[in-house]
Length: 197
Image (cartoon, rainbow, N blue to C red; front, side, top):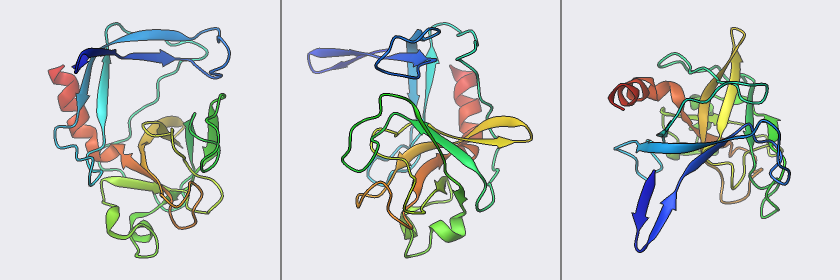
């Protein structure tokens, strides 16, 4: 998709199968973007409806390095401490360098009742969000935004979250888990946009 901003033009592309950004990986595929569909009620100030879909110009074939993940059932909420994995090339620590190699870490789910407590995220967290981590040791960090929180359920990997925000006090702040858009809250919207586009 091309977007005109002032006098410059931005071109978006999707890179699949990437692992080490410093090395040309075998099996990496660069796909052109036909369209980006941003949620029509997205609000960057309150960080709500923080979700978008990307339509590629052509289908991508699965391979050893490119595999599809499933979507969770509509409305599903994982229980507290459910084991999930965050992946991304964000900063390795608060203010630290960006990762060159894809990072992966276990981030257990923090249920809404806990995450919405006043000494956790309080009223900043909504039921359309999912919290994970918060132990003060492992978390998402700047640069991980938009990446997945993947959870294995019934033998299949599902994308349950999309990295939305973290603490301004630091990436590994206790009781400030990484906050994700809860994908299961948007299944009807995803299906509607896929059928329209």
